[in-house]
Amino acid sequence: MDIKNSQKKVDNWIKKYGVRYFDIMTNMAILTEEVGEVARVISREYGEQSKKNQDESLNLSEELSDVLFVVFCIANQTNIDLQSEFDKKLIKKTVRDSIRHSENKKLF
Image (tube, rainbow, N blue to C red; front, side, top):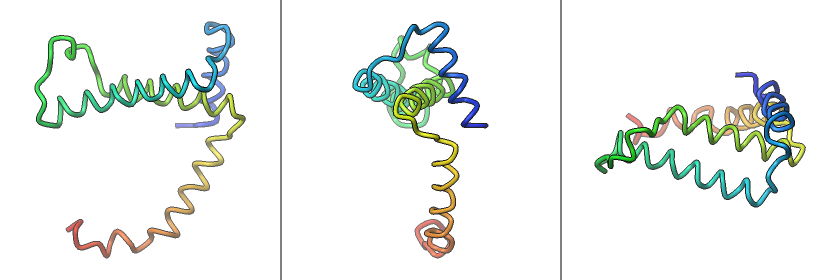
């Protein structure tokens, strides 16, 4: 995925169809709601909770996409270049964790 391009697509969509961005606090609440929906799907598909009738329409890929959409909105609103930040994060994690996980006996 090209994060920079995805952020731009979301920005274009908001400007064309969404009128404007919701304020940051509203988007934070929406993000929390979407993450909750991801948790709901996982707990019912992969966990021990049973599905309810209204859960049949929930779809993990769709819910994860909803999370990404709102994250891109928040990044756009706060002028964060997620592509650059993500690339830096991968470098940081690689340096920090280059042998950490391979030496973790809990993972074997």
